[in-house]
Image (cartoon, rainbow, N blue to C red; front, side, top):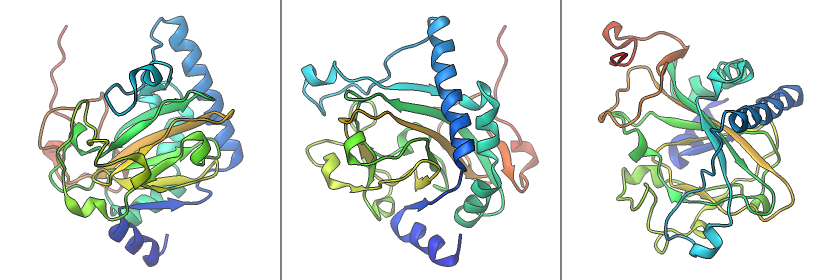
Amino acid sequence: MNQADVQFYKENGYLLVKGVFSMQEVEEMRTAVENIIQRAARAKADANHAWQGDYLEPEQLKKLVLKGFHDVHYHDASFTRAATHPNMVKALNGIIGPNVQLHHSKMLVKPPSNGAAFPMHQDYPYFPHRDHSMLAASVHLDDADMENGCLCVVPGSHKQGPMPHVGAHYLNHKEHPISSGTPCPAQAGDVLFFNYLTIHGSDVNKSPRTRRNVLFQYRDASDVPTENVHFDWGMGLMISGENPDFSRARPNYRIVE
């Protein structure tokens, strides 16, 4: 990370960092993803997480598949190592600052030929925060391009602030088609960082190749949620630096037996 990278992120709301993870680390995470899917199937917890809505024709929508699970760092230690990886921390320190927290993690797998699309949206409605420091770090476990549904972003859209969403928190697809975004092709081991106000989405995986990504959501340790709409056990884990507010060292929760 250099000052030009930081400035690019501030101006455009996203930044692709090449080669954050080695191929050995990528392969470990690929194996972990496959094992999670198998364990979920055995536990009868597997499901199709494709987005629903009117952004695609119903006949097309029902054919699409997306595998997605939250909090993957609780399922496999390779993701705990990835979340706190020195290369990841360096990038986060440049973008967010010295004090960084993990909010949550998740994996997204678009299978070949019918991997589901993500309509254009902001992540803000899912977990709004006061200072808008929240960002996603999308770790690519496969080479991604438009053919297999790489992420598309609208540069500078984070400066517009929160926008009205429809359905399950996506933008009106007639006003914000996926084609309005700038494609962000990447290679396995690369990480795409983007602010949670940056408009983004991805098209259907039309290729014979799988597209696997792991997303880590991070925030400045001093940034706080404005609504109690998203809670994950262990959110707020310090990735870098210190928590400046002792009273906010952990989420306000109550254990119910």
